[in-house]
Length: 247
Image (cartoon, rainbow, N blue to C red; front, side, top):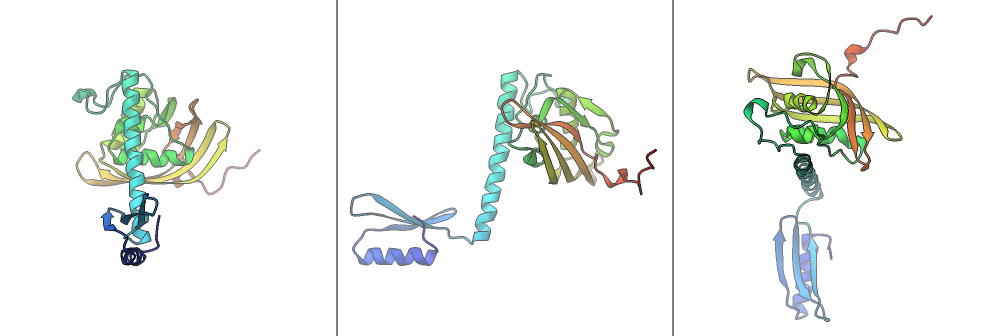
């Protein structure tokens, strides 16, 4: 059972002790402080309260969710690689460390709103396999001139992994926001804005900042995969003062 504050917990302990009840604690365990005692039926009871402020608890909870999501991404991707005969990260030879079997290694995300966030977490974890696993086996991805040295559309598992590897080679930290999502049946359209801070081939700091458009496809297992990824498809540079007159 939870009480409102450490003071309330101490007051409860004092009342119990005054009534002759044996009390263990307070015992502090990371995010909770507790006392323990037996009720008249011999059942052990725990009274607990968080010793931290709500803001600190919220920060810890968010960090824990991030860690769990990162662990889930990595575990599912590696399991999928094992099932498909692919090699987990680190097992490949140096000259093809980003190339694996063309068999699909996918895992998707729970919703299209989360796909860009999960991709950012995979990049921030420097995990090529986890990033590639978010893409549908038939996905098309636009490469980016300031990352890949050109703008072309690539398809296929190895090409997508190589595309993701170029981002990971930047030693990136990626921040992203999904501005809006439109779902129609098994497809969804998202509009993202993202920024990667990393290092170029010369070791100098770089920032890559773009506005993306993404089409997602729901798989048979109910999870969502990138199906078309155009990472600069919504950049302001595409805009013109007004469209030409329609005849």
